[in-house]
Image 1: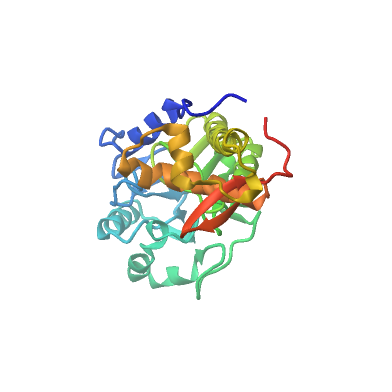
Image 2: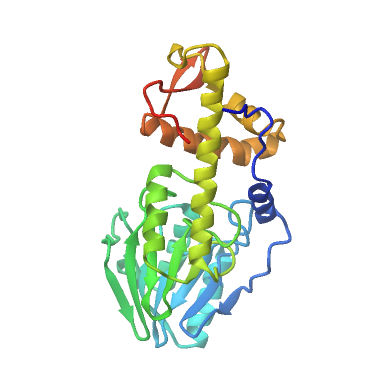
Length: 315
């Protein structure tokens, strides 16, 4: 096996990541009729992790609309939403939340302040008190749209996507973004969810952050390849250390997370290391540990990783 000392990360990945954080992101209108069934209302919370801000969606063709996500609680979001509801004489039949993170649920108080009856129309997996649970496969319908809930954990333990049958489209939440890559809570579950999302055969994706995804199958495949490619690099770095370091892997000498990163990528700017590379490396190490391909031991307060000797060598 060749040494990995000079192997560098796929530059396209980091170019995509960095571009997602830059100010040159495509402009998204505050309110936009994306199609005749889908209106996007921006959350008013642009930022490094939120891109142009949280996308919330009013879905339907009649007077009753389904609302997907509620933004972060920035007052301008509620102002935009109420304005369009009043201008078009619309009302909200259901409020569907993709997951529990604050930039998706923070607008609920403002929503209920506008219409107190909406407090009894909020649906979320693992609901908060007073909310309704969403079951996998549950159908929500209003005039012009039929939406099916899909349980897709990984980014968050309660993450749901929503399939819009009339457009063969998927509201992808934070599992797949319009730009760059997302942060993962449980990588093994996340990869299973990506497979499930791909199996729906949807062409269009409506992400919770970023532009509409015009070719969702390609985007999902890009996400899967990126994660699997990183997995091979990290496992390979540990295996290379075992084979060439002259020590038994199960002696638990191993490599620290920072040493793994240095072995693969060389010197990395500190801000990029902390904000992206280190968290993504830990995601993959945890998945490899869960599948017993690698293990770790604490030495001097540092977590050091090693290949489990009995595992078959990855190719």
